[in-house]
Length: 114
Image 1 (cartoon, rainbow, N blue to C red):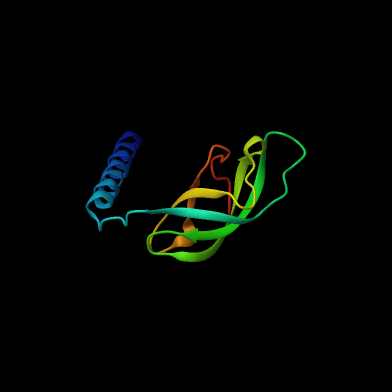
Image 2: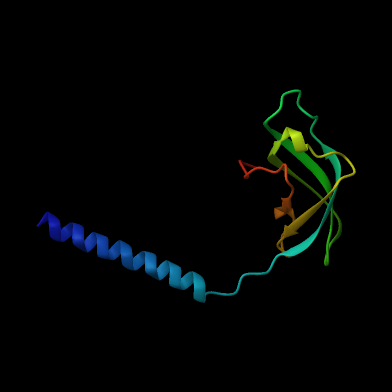
């Protein structure tokens, strides 16, 4: 009896997973990301130790549909490639929410929090 219940539960979970995947593919199309530049106007001080540290970056986004949007974000960053005021970062952001920008930089580490 327990085997039958477990088999039904497994088949149900599989059907739900397949349904979620199919619904995600056939749903409304995702908005494509816009690419732009972030001019850094503020950055956390460079730590004395090497390795990975948190950095908070403030700057101004310029892109195809945005000019002068002030944003900030916290990242895990390699101290050997620490950003500086005046740097330009290549970024991508959704057109409807530029506050959700993502940078491309050799010092950037996987996102660890907000």
